Image (cartoon, rainbow, N blue to C red; front, side):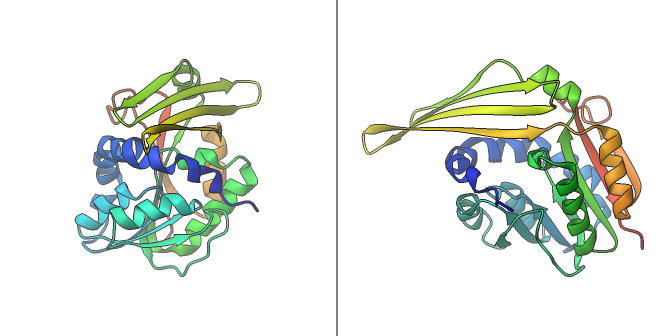
Length: 246
C-alpha cells in the first residue's frame, strides 16, 4: 500500500502557513472535546500529525505525545517543531502499536485523504488497537455540505518569499474532492515552481458511524463545527468523538 509521500512537496508551505493556522484555529475545540477528559501527562497519539504544530501545543501542555505521518518531509519539520514528541514515519492504514494511549487525534480533515471505506475502517481498527480501555478517539472530517459550500473558487497565500495558489473542486457524483496547488518559492534569488494535486473522499455520517461501531467503539458523539461548536467558517465540518469500552 502506497504511503502518503505525495505530501512531501507540500510540507514546506504547510509548515509555514496551514499547520500553524489550523492548530491556532482548532485547538480550543480539541481541548474542549477531548483533552479535558484526559488525565495530566496522558499519552496522546497525533495521527496524521503533519508538520507537528498540534503535537507541539500538546507537548507544551504536559501531554506525552507521539505522532505518525506518511510524509517524511512533513516529519522533518515536525521533529523541529515538537522536539519532545516521538515521531514515526508510517501510514495510518498500517501502523500497529500496543494499547497505551488515552487519546488519539486525527485532526484537520486528515482522514478525508483516505480514499476507500475499507481502508478507513483499517485506520479505525489500528486506532482501536492502540487505545487503552476507556480511551478516546477524536477526528474531524469534511462532509458533503462542506465540500459543496467551501470547495470552490481559488485562494492565494502570498508572502514575501512564496506564493501558493490553491484551487479546490468537488465532484458530487463521485464524492471526490481535488485540490490543485501551485507553489512559487523564492530560492537563491530565483523562483522555484511546484505543482501538485491532493485528493479527498467525502464520507457520509452514516458511513462513519457504521465504521466506528463495527470496529467496537461506543458512546459515539457527533458535533457540527458551526452549529454545535460555533466555529467560524465551519460549515460542513463535523467532529466525531468515540470511546473504547473500559
